[in-house]
Image (cartoon, rainbow, N blue to C red; front, side):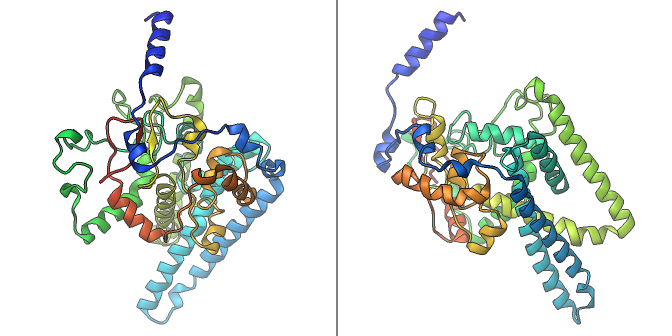
Length: 393
């Protein structure tokens, strides 16, 4: 196709009338602001990355890992078996929370928000993510794509909604249940809880292994963060993916060595169970940041970066958990606009961006476990047509 025909096709697409039926029905106003207008409202010091201060947070987390692990060595002296079980469960949850905070610091490194130095960011990010079985460089690349395409129906890398046709529903005009709710989704509460448990416990590992829940690449035999030849990565990123493979392989080898030395049951108790708890926590946080029945997705003729960045949700998990999570949940909107703002400035920056965005700033104060149930059962699919589309069930 010639450049002139491409230009003509683009002009035709641009002239196509927008399908805003759902936006009108929901009373959704498409925002009209520039990224500069938003940035100018945030004080300059919020963008400053202090390496020393970032390391203080890291040492804080590592100290907690040590204290919790050391305390757990005394659980065997507990007087009864039920008490020992309770202590171990509490340890797995507490250590899982701390592991999640460490993962968030590694995530900050991937955005180069930990330090002004790219070398320090990549070194610390690798040292934090590989022990948590996360391929640092591979995820750094795909997460960057997620930020560049948030809320876009063909560019979103990580949270791509299923469409009506993909889940096997008839066209809306031929669907007797219309916008829903659809009986095919009617499950008992126990079945829904089991579905959620499986989904949240396997969500992050499956995304890393198979890009589950992410952008679809029909021509790829294995879309994975461990496949440098898959369509996610460019040729110049080959070495980054290989570094991630080496890092994860080294960690697996180290765990096998520890298992043979200390006993595999010990590794399961002290590391595997907190790791699984951390996966669930992180997946829940990510899920609630990007999926909500009141927030739409845009298609090409409506989407731009800053409109997509505003399609995110701030949610607090309480002051204590927000502290241990390094405010990854309650400052997520500003993070999508300016990902190099470190978490210790993101709280202040959120106050300014909240005023700047006005009605386009979204914060959900619903208790997370209630919101989780509501979103899981109500956000099933979107329509195949429409430039502004909302989740339906």
